[in-house]
Image 1 (spheres, one colour):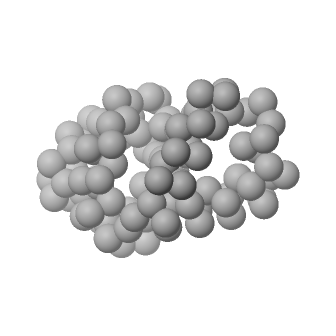
Image 2 (cartoon, one colour; image 1 turned 120 degrees about the horizontal axis):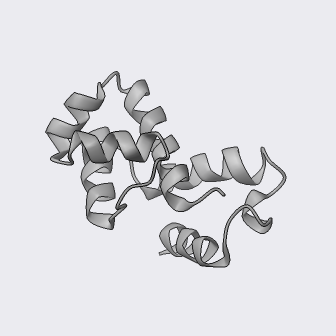
Length: 102
């Protein structure tokens, strides 16, 4: 099942690679543990907190608007509306909507 951590992990990994940062460097600069970052990027599950997301976004020079573009391009249009399918739980759908439309 796709969940918020998996989607966010994909976005963070993609952005980190585009910025040419290693996991170690991003962890160091953001003060998010490397173990947490590895779990987040590999979809093994992580304690995804808004605080960690903001720290990572700050170092990566990104924001929730860019995450929304990623989300829409990879999930909504690219995969026939996964947000409306059973791929995401209702709780995860609501969390994503809240993150995007705050």
